[in-house]
Length: 402
Ligand SMILES: *Cc1c(COP(=O)(O)O)cnc(C)c1O
Image (cartoon, rainbow, N blue to C red; front, side, top):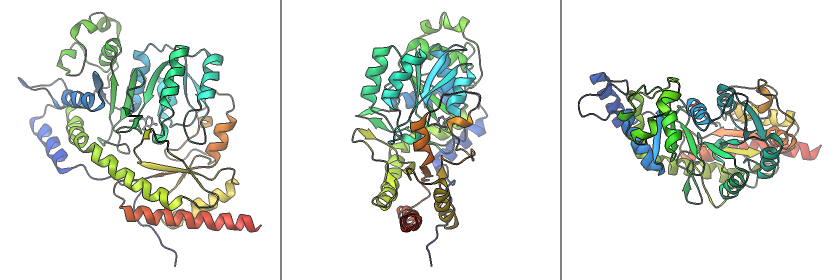
C-alpha cells in the first residue's frame, strides 16, 4: 500500500492566544480606526509600525490594507507616473504586475534563472532597451538574487529599487535584512504569508519624502502626527497638499494580532526552515528532479519549496502531479496551460503585453511549487518528500525505459 498524506496545504496555524486576547481588547474598547485614540494612547497600528521598523532596522514604517496596496503606494511615492515603464520579475505573482498597472505604468518583465532569481544580465539589457528607471524586485518564493551585484548594477544605471518582500519577511542577504537594500520595501500580512492578519501590508523606507507621501496616500488626512515611525512634521509641509488620499489604512484590530506575531516571527522562521530542509533532504538525489540550491549568503525563510522537472514533457509532469494529489500532496505547477488558483504566469497577464522570454518559459514549464504550512510536522514533511520522490521516480523510470 502506498503511503498517503492527509494534512491540509492551506491550513495555517491559529492566531496565538495572546493575539486573540489583544484583538478582543480592541473590540471591547471599540477604537478600531487607527486615528481613534484615547487620551495618551498610541494605538495598535502606530505601535506595530514602530516595532516593525525596529525589527527591520528601517527608519520609517507604514501599515496598510494589503501587500499589493503597499507596492502601489511605494511605486507612486518614488514618483512612478502613468505610462512609465517599471522593470519586474517575469516569475512572480499577479499582485506584482497588478500594482504596476494600479499606477498606470507598464511592466517590463525580466528573465528568471534556473535558481529562480532575477537574471541580472537580462536586467542590464532590459534597463538599456526599455529606459525604465524603476525596478520592482520581487523576491518570489523567498529566492533572493545576488543583492550586492544587483544594487551595484542599479546604482550604476540610476535605477531605483522597490522591493516586494511578500515571501522574505524575516529573511536576509549577506546579513542585511530583506527589504533594506532598495529605497523602499513592501511586505504582506495576508493569511498565507509569514504573519497572518487576513489582509494587510507594511512598507518600510529610510527616505523622509517617500514615507511622507506614502502616509498621505494611505489616507492619514492631517493626522500624520499620530504615527510613531514617520519623519518629522516638516517632511509633510509640501507633501500634504500635493498627495491624494487613496484610503488604505491598517486598523487597530489587525495590528493587535500582528504585534503578537511579530514577537514570535524569528522562532516561526526557524520552524519553517526545519520543515523546508526535511522536504529538501527527501528530494535531493531523485533522478530527473532538481532541487534549487540556496546560496550561502541567503538566509531564507522556507515557507514554500520549489523544484524543477526541467525539460520534461508536460504530460509526464501532469502525471506526477495527479498521482501526488491522489496521495494527498498538493503541488502547484507554473507550466500549466491555464492559470489555476493563486498560480499564474506572465503570459496570463494580457493587460501587460510582453516580448517572449524563452529562458523563463523553460524554467516555468518545469517548475513545481509547494506550500509548507507550519501545521505540518517535520515527519509530515518527510512523508511528503517520500511521496513526491516515489512518483517522480516512477514516471522518470518509465520514461527511461521507453
Ligand atoms: C501575496 C503577494 C503580494 C501581495 O500581497 P497581498 O497582501 O495579497 O496584496 C505581492 N507579491 C507577492 C509575490 C505575493 O505573493
